[in-house]
Image (cartoon, rainbow, N blue to C red; front, top):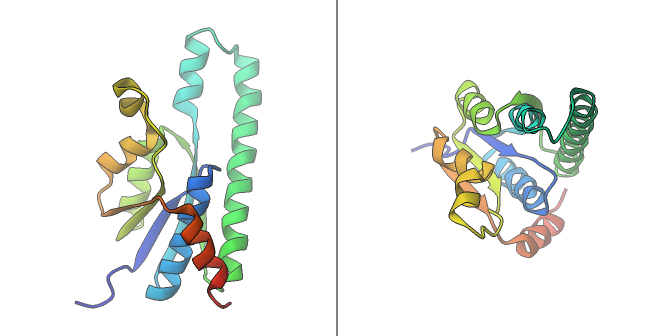
Length: 163
């Protein structure tokens, strides 16, 4: 059968669930000697919708987009630091566009064997479920998806693994 995972892609968005997903993906990559790719997406589609709805004017959109880009870069640098702690090579990718579309394209482009996501947030309505980026990414992923839910256990496992 061979190595089950050659390329693991993890989505980072700054949430605690995404942080657990990064740590878990690093441990999986190390265990399987897999290539690890961390990706963040600046959701320009949502920004455009906010402008069309009159919530933002163009100037505010540009400022908010710069903030989102800066945040994405910070999340990816943190993923790099965590991977370095475990001596795991990592490729970081910052994308812009519709989150689920950009991630699907990246998964295909990198020939991902596994897509790792942070836990799905509590959904209060069917509408929120349909609008959830995480839910959309799970639905369109062209490879198996691992949803990381158990934050405390993963943090402990990450800290206990030798460097």
